[in-house]
Length: 101
Length: 101
Length: 101
Length: 101
Image (cartoon, rainbow over all chains, first blue to last red; front, side, top):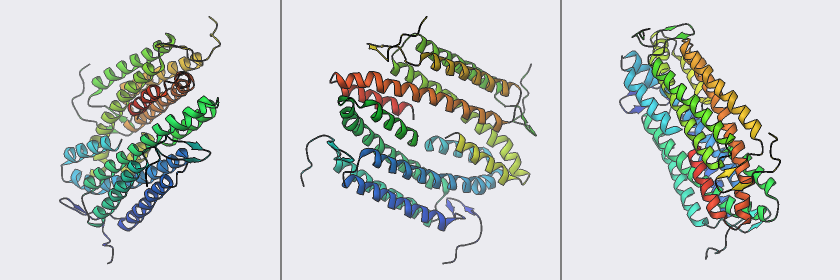
């Protein structure tokens, strides 16, 4: 399936991420990290070692979120600004940033 | 396999988490959340919906971290304090908190 | 001095915040909170009470940051998007979000 | 007034911070940072410059919090552990960490 080479074209509630394959690879790796953390607890590993891995998984999750947010700003929000609907799109971003803190 | 009913008995670098089964259940659920996020990107879902799920997965990961940290303070750190090694154990906790921010 | 009733008109590197008076009030209050925290330490208050006040001051600082960020998105970034310079403006926002985490 | 040379001796609800003078200096500097941020908004400075200063003030505030938390763990919490009251002291720390996130 060839990756459609256009940027984040936003039909209502549907977005093709421009870097979809890369994002999916990162999420597959993150899934493995979470499984690895479970394996450490299963294997009675020292708490600090497990917590260090959790901090790494959190950074990986944050990195995916930052990439998606950048795509969203460049795609959906920029489109909304050009269409004159910036307030609604920006309010949505602010609500999102609050959840992501 | 009965859960060993003792608290976090710390032989060097090995710790049996007192709530091991519950932690493993939470991590299995988190793994499913990460897979779900990948599925949303695969299915070209709207960025904000995906980011909202990422925020939920992050909270779940933080909750596991907080539980482990509490176990660690009650087990390993309290033991180190009683053995007169509190400075080293507390320095380790502070370094951990820095990573987890 | 009447508050100029226009939105965040962005001449290079100079911005009149639309809610300038409110922001300055919040910062004056925050200054008082920081002085209060110093007073608690001066008065040998219990650590947890001081740390609780620091958490409150942090939330106040974050709230000012969120308001400024929203003003920036609605003003400078929306203007850059309309002028066709969205990538630079969005890259600046992403770098800012990284610092503010 | 000589700085009492004992560590964080915890009479109920009263604690002499071992690095009291240093903490007070940092808070005085932070107060100046908050005043500086207000001055930037008063002077219609570019949003991103103001937000960058807010991120710096936040780091300074976090650094004071981390120092106080370390003092608390080494003083009050270690004392509670030695007196056999670790669960209550650790529950208090966990509630605090939740507020400080």
